[in-house]
Length: 499
Image 1 (cartoon, helix red, strand yellow):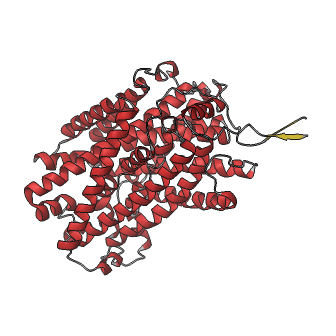
Image 2 (cartoon, rainbow, N blue to C red; image 1 turned 135 degrees about the horizontal axis):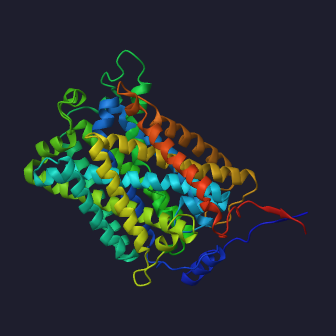
Image 3 (cartoon, rainbow, N blue to C red; image 1 turned 180 degrees about the vertical axis):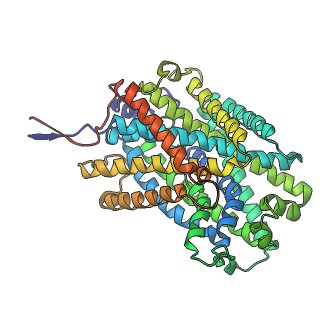
């Protein structure tokens, strides 16, 4: 018996070598490789978006756990850094558009890959819906109106149409707008955070360890885990750097760098602005008892005045736009990757590719219209839909992430030796195990039923995830989509054959 291993793709070293690497992996290069390291990092940063993440969940997390909620950013940042290191090894060897679906396909096979991509896809849809919904109150504050359910759906549609137009223009404009969003968001976060800390600090830093009585007579662990939605919702987006792998020169080296920088810079920016916002609140009790439902808008109005708060709101809205843009790009590449491998109904249409713009237009349109439908349904069902959509989206993303981490662990235990430009070496197994432990714990925390609400409210995340997974398994059983393509699968694991 002789052991044979699938040939490793050639290392990147120019456009011709990148195309050769992709051909060795079974695909032709159709995208434009116009996204450099800074633009690729900007895409991941604007998807992760510390401004969007913090501003969307600040009030929810503060009411749940008080000021120490800030430390969930540190914990989630370390945990997701471990996950990003596992992803970096995989994408360095398999720099294929679509992210988690092609990665798991090459690691352990079609079925696991199909279900992973299905969960990730719906979680992306829910995240886009959550981001566009979360943008509406800030648009309302910018133009001095109170959004209704109808205006929420309408403005979400306008936002999605705007980002769709940018995405349809091609990789070049996607990278430019992502970089503009990154610069605006980082400058805005540093200015706001710096001003609040220097001139509007009402508390000592010690308050960041004060639970403010949110634990009642019991342990603080429960309130802190509930408040950790802040950190858990914040730290995903780095995978978007790999979703566009076929648009990045020298992807095996550049994408792992971009992923890590997304975690470092995004995490530090989020930590800085969250600390500033907490210390700038003059009345914690008013937030905890619901008297101040939107502490961020109130803070901006009182500190920066009418004109200054408008300027900040422009930056905030731009952050939401760039975040939606990046999410939409990631979702469209996943759909295209599925369709290219004939893994989903309508593959012939979804795999259409614009040779003029070098983008998959139909997949992009679907990545805009389905989230809008989710926004409309959520608004029709509940006025308080944002927290539920955020929790489901976060949990779905974490489940999909851990499906990749588990696939990498299984492949590693069966003999996979990463052969890309980025490798963890002897630390690979331990990082893989630590990433899986963190991710499973985070997903359980997001799905955990809490509060005194009706049972269907407490189990919204569990029910939502069960429906998505159940429908995916039903689709797999009846349609067998995973068996339609002969594209390579499971080739990371060495195969034994007769010599």
